[in-house]
Image (cartoon, rainbow over all chains, first blue to last red; front, side, top):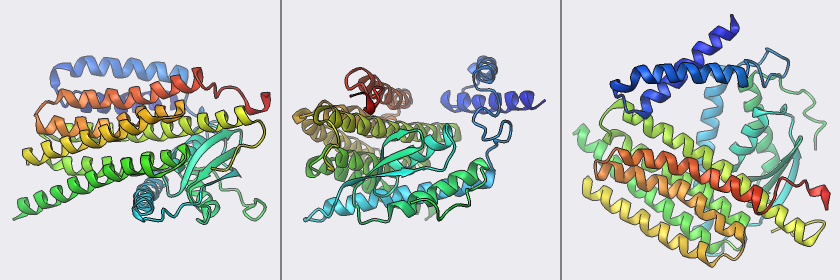
Length: 173
Length: 106
Length: 91
C-alpha cells in the first residue's frame, strides 16, 4: 500500500517536471505520462520507500520542516552572497581563511549531503570533505561563529527529515 | 501604474544581478587561494543568478515557462554547490598529496 | 525591456570573458576547473536572459543542459585527474 502511494506520488512529481520542461505543450503529454510512470517504477526498484530511513520506514519529509529549512536556506544564501561581495569591495579585503573539522550528528545518506551542500552556499563556509561523520569546512573568516551556525542548520535539517534531534548538545566540541 | 512598478522592480533586479556577477568575477582576481575563489564563485554568482531569475519571471509567456525557469534555477543551485564541494575536495587532496601530512591553512 | 535584456546579456558575456582570462592564467588544474562552474552559473544566466531577449525558448533547454554538464565535467575531472576517490590515509 505504502509502495503504491509512493509510486503515484513520484509519477505525479515527475509529470509536473515533464510538463514544465515541455513548457505546457499538450502534444507530448501522453508520452510524458507514460515515461513518468516508468521512471517512477524504476525509482521504486532502485530507491525503495524509506531508503534513507534512520529506522526503516520512519523517514518522511515534514512539510513544515521543509518550509522552515527553505526559509533558512534562502535567507542565509542571500546573506552569504552579500557578505562575500562586501568583503571583496572593501580595499583591505578582510578575510582570514582557515579550515575546521566538525562531527556531524546527522545520519548517513541524504541528510548529511544536504548539510554539506547547503553549507557551501551559506555565509563563510565551504564544505571540503565529508568522510563518515567528519565534515571538513573551509571558512572564509575564522572570526565568524561557524560552529554555532552549523549546529543551527543541522537542527533544521533534522527537523525536516523528522529525525529526533540529539539531546547531548553539550557533549560535542 | 502597477505595470510601471513591476517594470521598475525588474530593472532594479536585473542591475543588481549584473552587479553580483561582476563582483563574483572580481573575486576570482582578488582572492589569493583557490578555495577562497570558490567561495566567491559559488555564493556571489548564485545570488546574481537568483536576482536575474526573479527579474525574468514577470516577463515569461506562461506559468509553465515560469515553472521551467525555477526548475533550471534549482538545478543550477544544486550543480553549483556540488561543483564547489568537488573542486574544493580536489584542491585539498592535491595539497596533502604533494606535501604529505597537514596541508597549509590557506 | 528587450534592449535592456540584450544589454544585460552583453554584460554577462563580458564578465564571463574577463573571468576566463583568470581561468586561463591558472596555474593549478583545479583553478582551471572553475571555468566549468562558471559556465554552470554565468552561462545559465546568460542563456535564460537571451531566451527572453531573442524570444528563443530553446535557449532555456541549453541553460538546463549547461547546468547539468558543468557538474558532470567536474565530477569527471576530480575522479580521473586528481583522484579524490583515494582516501587520504593511503599515502
